[in-house]
Each structure stands twice: as C-alpha cells, then as structure tokens.
Length: 166
Image 1 (cartoon, helix red, strand yellow):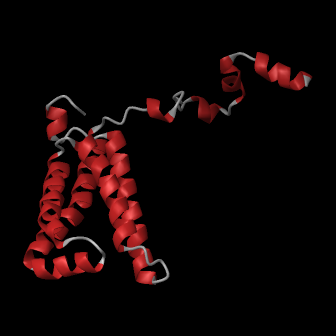
Image 2: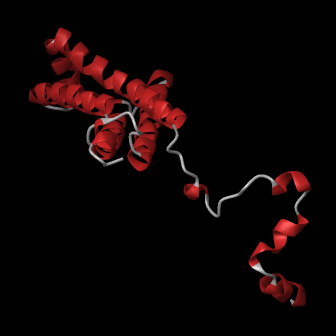
C-alpha cells in the first residue's frame, strides 16, 4: 500500500530520468493522436489508399453496367428488388469518384463503412462456404479501411484540403 502511494506521489516526468540514454533522444508525445501526420509522405499514402479503396467500387459499378440483367437476377436471388440496380450503380460510381478526388471524404467514407457492412451481411452471410467467408471478411476489411479514412481525412492531395476541410 505504501509503495502504491509513493508511485502516485512521484512527479509526472520522473520516469524520464530512469530511461536508457538512447530513449531520451526520442521525443515521445503524450498520446499517439498528438503526432502530426500532415507530411507529404502521409498524404501520398492517403492518396494511394483512396485510389485502392475506390477501385473496387468503380470497377463494380461499371461492371454492373455491362450485364444489368444478370446483376438484377443476383439481387433478386438475395431478396432485393431489381429496381435497386440503377441507384446502386450510381452510388458505387459516385462514391468512388468522391473518394478518388477527396471530395466530402469523411462523410462518403462513413457511408461506405455502412454500405460495406450491409452488403457483407446481405450477400456473404453463408459463412460455412469458405469463398463466402473470405468475401465476408474482405467486406469487413474494406469497412475498416473506410473507417480509417473517415477518421483521418483525405490528406493534402484532395479537394477537401483545397477547400480547407482536411
């Protein structure tokens, strides 16, 4: 008990004096969120992430245009009305372009988190099938990528940054 009280009474920076010398030269922020990630390299990484994430939706939306009847049939087999095909195509292509350009990135990425989760549960819920399980997990991973993008923003190379909304 006395040892615990002693720990609570030590000054905030006491641990710095007991670190090895090589650790003293590395500045440590109070929280990881305090680290500035506004460098060009980070912005290039965010641009690359936006391109990679949006490719799936752009290719998927354009692919649905190549054979709308087959896509409507697949949607009907999953219990969705085929009339949702055209709004889905517009949604996928539109959100892909928004992510690519970095326009309204945080909001669009948040919507795509929900879309990825909903489509995972509607189209890939047969987890006993290994292919469907992989597709389900892929959708979860995509949702995670969009969640990170929604939290961190688009980076410097975006319409949002030019508009002052990083």
